Length: 230
Image 1 (cartoon, rainbow, N blue to C red):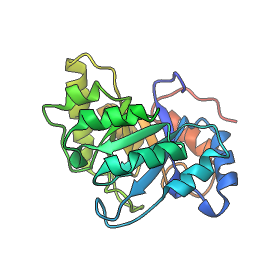
Image 2 (cartoon, rainbow, N blue to C red):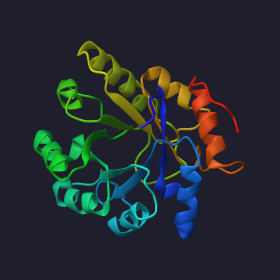
Image 3 (tube, rainbow, N blue to C red):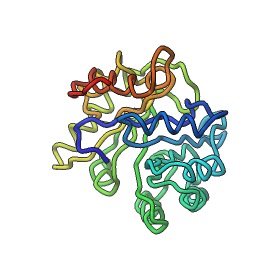
């Protein structure tokens, strides 16, 4: 992935799924570092989004890394399925795990890399530094998973700030991904709190009035990154 200080990921659920090949090609032509693939089981939140068949099809047409975000209970039932479908990273929720270390190990055994996820209303506990040290990065939802058009939740921003402070005190350089209503108007708020991965969706990368590449550049510029507009 890119060495720049702030990365952008693309929310697959906000792409034009009726022409996935064209949507993926547009992402590939931008500065997006990886794709964020939401999976919701209807229990963790009251909706369904994407499944492993779509991920497998997507992996067949692109080499861009894919993070499967398992917003599910009993994540151990899904890890192998989404790893076989092509997930490079698998995010599992703090709220859905009894033994996070065991789940992280299961993910690594598939060849994927673990990511630790928190809901918008879940604050980091005392075990945060220990868990964050075992994963590639931390995914912090800033809205509830599965429904577009929500507003950035201030409490989630404060959780990001607390995560960064706890990581710094522990000497960890772990990245923190902010996901939910992240765009060029809001991303400075989360980056100043400590996030350094921005997941762009319907209000960011895929909003009307420009290309994914242009919107990605705008998000990076708003976060303080030096970009060259094309």
